[in-house]
Each structure stands twice: as structure tokens, then as C-alpha cells.
Image (cartoon, rainbow, N blue to C red; front, side, top):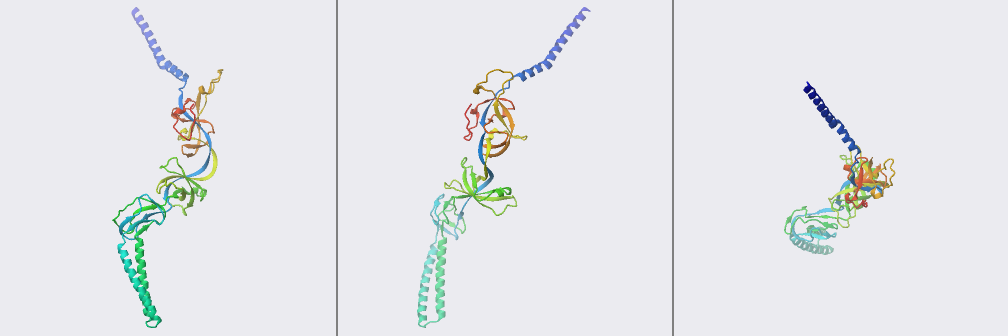
Length: 386
């Protein structure tokens, strides 16, 4: 009996200890951990910041266009023949009227000599008939026949000279010749292209704009063009003409601008990002695109501010270099983008500090350490390291 009581007492004690340990492990310990985590200071994230600034921007109509030459042709003979000589090199600039290609005209030159002899004989015969008719020794019909023979011989000479001229290709305007696609001694048919000739300065850029923007367009407006071949180097020109109709398929109007191209950097057929400056200058708050966090629920930025002092704290204010910083998340309304900067229509003021690198590890109210050595290089947004 005594053993049973002792065994029961030991079992109850052990069960109580096990229950207490289980309660501590599954109920008290998790709550203690939650408390420790809640009281632990948040980790400080290292970010790069940029300062918003006010800029004067002009409203733009963006478009995608293609360059085309003011004048551009394929050099091709009007009649067939064997190429005798080239008087140009591929890629050469030539003046108007320059002899470019010569086709073999030996047969035509021989025909010209024969026709000139015939014309000479016809002129002599006509002169004799005129002398005879003065003395009444020939009829008027004979004189008329002599005049017709002379005119026919003259026409034959002119036709042969025209054929010879067609076998000499000259530049119809000043421009640059492309790659040669034929060789000396090669027979070439009429209309077969030998090379292209393009006038490069100035140069046109054609681009479509939606019909809703037609009222904002007018000849003489400034046009700014950027091409992939010359990044960071905008080309400026002016709008010269608008097409007479809107495309029924796309509801776009094709617009043409003229760009100065004295260095021949722009070539026909090149892709162009076009912007028509079609409005008045406006003062807008801008910041780099990297400072914006894009979301389906709205675009936002993280604004960096000094951390508020703890309640009841009587400590002296820390030095600016040691001051704690926190972030505030703000929803913003975006405007146009220009290069690596974007306009903010609402939500920010000029002069505020915005996180430009490191947003992924942030949340509202998070503490941050500013180190602009992490920022992407940008010549448009310099900011001293802090």
C-alpha cells in the first residue's frame, strides 16, 4: 500500500513537471520570443538618396519615326549597255552634274558620224535647190523634199546624241553615293540599279501622331530626335509639313520634320525617337526614374526624413552626420519622362530626399543609413556622398 501511494505521488509530480514544461514550451516561450522581437530595434537598411528638384519642362508629343533623304534615287541607266568606266568611289560625296558612270557608246558614236555626214549632204542639197529655185530652174516640191531630207538628217543626229547622253550617268543633285553594285565590263540592262545617291543634309524624319494631337501641331515647331546610334546626343530640327489625310487603318497622321545633318551622322532608314515641343514651359518636380516604386495599386516613393526623438527624451540633438533617418512611403502621380528623369505631378515637393537605390528592403517607418556610393552613376543627378 505504501509503495502504491509513493508511486502515485511520483507519477503526479512527474506529470505536473511535464505539463509545466509543455505549457512553457508551447505557450509562454512563443510569447516571450514575440515580445523580444517586438522590442528589438529594427535593422538599419543602407540606401542611396537623391534630391528632388524643380525643372522647366515643355509639353511634348512623343512618336517613333524613320529618317528619309530629302532627295534619294537609284542610279540606273535609261538604256542597256556595257559599263566602260566608273568615276566615283563607294561612299563618296559628289556635286550636282558630276559624271558618274560611262557605258560603252562606240556604236552610237559611229552612228553619229554617219548621221553627221548625211546631214552635211542634206544641207548641201538644200542649198543647191534654193539657188535653183531662185533662177526658176527647179520646182517648189523639189525644194520642199530637200528641206524634209535635211530635217530628217538633223533629227537622226539629235537622236544619236541623245542615246550617247543616256549612256553617261550624271548626278542629278549633290549627295553621297552608296555601295557600288556593278563592275567594269559588266552588261547592265535598262533600269538596273548601280548605286544609290542620297542627299543627307538636311534630312527628313517622318513619324505618325494620333489624330487627337493634330490641333497641337503646326509647321515651324521645334522637334527633338534621339537615335540609338548616337545615345545622349539629341538632334533638333523643325516641323515642316503634315500629311493631307489621316490613315483610316491606324487613325494616325504622318508628320514630317527637317533635321540639320551637316556632319552626315543621320542616314535614311534609321530608327528615330521623336518628340515635338508643342506646348508652353511648365515648372515640374522631377527625380530619377529609379526613385519610383511601380505597383498595380499605385506608384510610390520613399521620402527620407530625420527620425523623431523618443518621447520624454532629454538628450541633446545629435550631430547631422549621426542623425537617425527613417523613410515615409508616399503615393505619387507621375507625369512625362525625359531620359532618366520623370516628372511628379503630385505627392512631392522640390528639395525633398527620396530613396533612389535600395527600395526593395524598405517598409514605411524603416530606419535607413544613407550612402550614395551605392547609387547608379548619373551625370544628370549628382549628389554628394553622406
